[in-house]
Length: 93
Image (cartoon, rainbow, N blue to C red; front, side, top):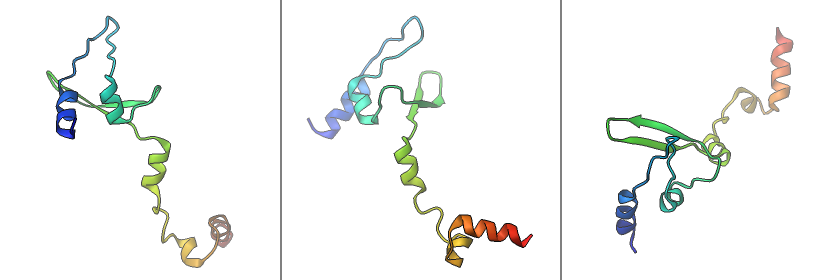
């Protein structure tokens, strides 16, 4: 089965809303989204006949996204540890 066929199958999956308004995400969709039990999803968009869900990123994904954001900070420019730099800044006051 190629990716186009698999995508078409996922698009055509149907689920039933329970009496508690719960949905079971089909296995193929869970795999494609990388969903794990207990993981949170966000409702991104609600329209008359459509609801869009987005899986919340895992801690590892969040850390990977933030990697490199602390570059070129004042303490790195001074070549010191962040806690030492902060102490020096507090001592200046």
